[in-house]
Structures are given as C-alpha cells and as structure tokens.
Length: 407
View 1: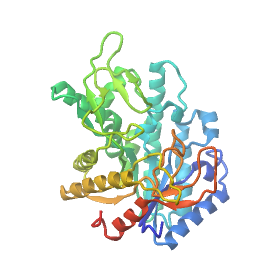
View 2: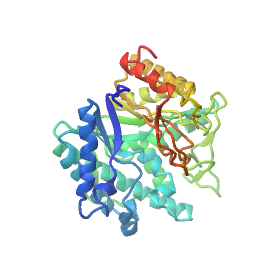
View 3: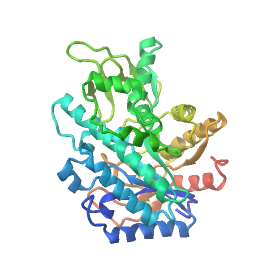
View 4: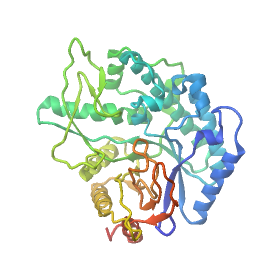
C-alpha cells in the first residue's frame, strides 16, 4: 500500500471479532488485532478509514433475535460501536456505520429473511431496515460524543436510473427506482424521517414499522458529516402499472438479488446503449458524474467514493504478469467523471477503488478479481498465495503520484 502511494485505506471491523456473541464479553484479542492494523497504517502515513458493519452479524444475535428484526439488536450495535470508539478513536477519526444498508436490506440471505410469503417477508424487511436506521443514529451520536474530531457517515450503494423512453411515466419510473433503492435511505439519515413517497409505499403494503416514543427525536438528532457512496453501474426503468393480482407497492425480484420490479412504480430494463462487464454490471462513468451532482445538490455534504472498480477473471501469464488494460480503462473513465463533477462544483474529498488487493467476492469467490495486486490462489487451491502487482498497480501509482494528472 505504501509503495502504491495510498493516502487512506478503507477497511471494516468485524463485530464478532470484538464481541463474539454480539452483546457480551469484549474479546481483547480482537481489539489487539485492529490496533496492530491501525498502528501499521499510521506508521506508513496511511489514514485509517473504518467501516463498523459490512454485512457480518454475530451469529448469536441471529439465533437470539433474528438479528435486525429485533430492536435490541440496534442497542447491541450501539454498544459495539462505543467499544470501537473507545479503543480506536484516539487514532481513527473517519468512520462509516453500515456498508450499503440500502442494498443489504434487499438480499434475503444477508438479512436472514426466510419467510416465503412476499408480504410477510417485506414486513420483516421494513422492520429490519428501521432498526438499522436506529442503530445508525445511535452510532453517529456516540461517535460525536466520544471521538474528538470524529467524522461519521453512511456508505450507500448509489443508484442512477435512466428512463427507457421519454414517456413521462417512464421518466417518473426512473426517478422512483433511484428513490426507492437509495435516496429514501439518505433522506432518512439526513432528515430523520421517511420521505413521503416511501411512507406511502409502507402504508400501501401495510408494512409500516413498529416505532417507539422518542425515535423521531433520536433519528433527527444524528447528523451525518459526509456521504460515502459505492458506485459500480447504472440502471434503466420503465413504468410498471399495478393490477388486481399485483397491488401497488408489491416488489418482484427478477434475475438477481438486488434489483426489483415494483408494481405501480417501475420495472428494470436493459440499457442497450451501455456495455457490461462479464458479470453483468453495465459500465457507465457518466452515471458517476450524475450521482455525485445529485447527492451534492440534495444534501450539500462532502462526498467520498468508497467503492468503485471492475471485477473480472484476470489471467496470470507464465512470466507472472497480469495485463489488465480493461481495469485501467474502467478506472480512468471514472476518474475523468469525478474530475468533471468537481468542475461542476461537487465537493469530492476522496476516492477508494475496490480494491487494493484481490479479495473474496460474495458470489463469485476468487474468480471475480478487483485488485491492483493479484493473489495467487483459487477458490479450492491456495497455491503459494504470492502477491503480484498487476499492470494497473503501476498505472495507479502514477495517478496518485501526479494527483490524477497522469491518468
């Protein structure tokens, strides 16, 4: 990382490493492990940028509460966050609460939603989502109390949707897709309450979460300091009318686990104007410029990109090289979009590509590689685990050294 020239490294702390059962005894070995990581980063002039929750819930809380379905999980998370602020807050000043809550909540296996009835599943989903919002607010306020100079924010999966046609209902459908997948979440964090369109949806489906007195004040009191966003692709949508069989607000997932059609709102469509990666993500640097401008215009908070990159099955040559010009082209295009967004007036404070080193993809394992550094292993064969610099490593090192001028 030092050779590459990184100025900051965004990583996650595992809740189960700090408190193995989620809300019991603190594991000092976990604290010691992350102290070593943080101290080594600082010794090499790399700023630690820490995510508290990245899809991993201590399993004891799943068994005890079904995780986020129970309000007590939010308070267990608050305690975990406080332990982290106390242990690391003297050196870590930049914090993220949840990674991609707005995407995670749509993936049943990540939330342990096993209910086969769609309405009951959505009711559980809405309650879990609400408890994660409470946890976020509790963590934000604790950070501001406990970490001198601390800055904290959500990291959202950003969404930019184009209308399939210029029909007014398709234009509206595209906006609805963005609002239901990302903007409702940012609005909740920023304003402390559901936007009107989202409350209407919750009422249409009869899945309004159970709340308690004082929740509104808590949610409104937790002020995020910036916005972190993960950007990989854009979407396209047309209007999907509701009918007797499919009432307004009903969602149907089609083709993957994160995108849905929503009756009375929107239907996902293929954008024939864009190329896609081998794994189906449509490549669209212009979409990044659009979301950066949109979020900055809506919230006037500094922005940082915490994930952006191209996952592909890289090939290691006989002479230990990885010629990944496709990755260089991908990142160069998105850096160009960022530069234009900054010219547009967006306050963009950082960019963290996904990822420095090859890592395990949640669905494709080590077949889907993102890193500037190749890890010589396969899913079922550890090989020698050598770290091999790809062509993109040397290119990105020059990008950092010249502050983007050499891209």
